[in-house]
Length: 282
Image (cartoon, rainbow, N blue to C red; front, side):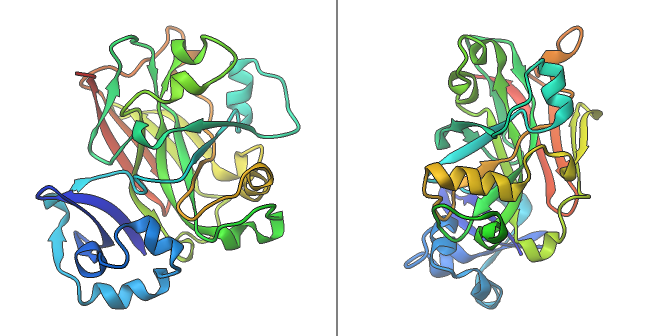
């Protein structure tokens, strides 16, 4: 299944994407499942195809895409998780994943603009795979990790690099409004299949700027879930952005920053294609 969150005629809803239409499950089930996070938490995903047969449908061209999970309890991001990216940053090898947080209100949806903030022009792209947690848990072992996954999505963990480098903490440069693109949908694991050979590619104005296989992660998804769940309880709808490959704009000569009018795409095999424009913050 492909599940998305969207706005239509001023109403926020969620539904199941089928071809060029979306079944509006929010309109049908909103009384008890008001959003996608609540559907995940209720364990309702297996029932959704049958429910979708009764739901009103809208053409995808009619909707405004929103972040897949607009209201996660937390977004945990993994830094320096591909060897090429670690090397281009000059960082040392580490024994544990590098984790930082992104706030929900820094996100934007598919076909919406990523916003370059007023205070900086150093806006960088970071194509990533996002993992959406299904079953909550604490101290989850690697062997059980995939049983806690509801699905996968594309993510552009946009970075305001000068603010990221103000100190050793990444948080300010990762939380400007409209810099974290998430979408267009969440794909359930049965559609994705085996992850290691899937290709992740980022394109800026049609030019490939990042490319890797998911098997190139230094810390794989089970290790990320094990590590994160050791220090915090993972909740249904939580998001783990699993890291970006090498090729970021900050490490190019000259630096390659996203600017107003650009088009940036993050594509992952069998997961989806996330497309965003770039605009200045109002």
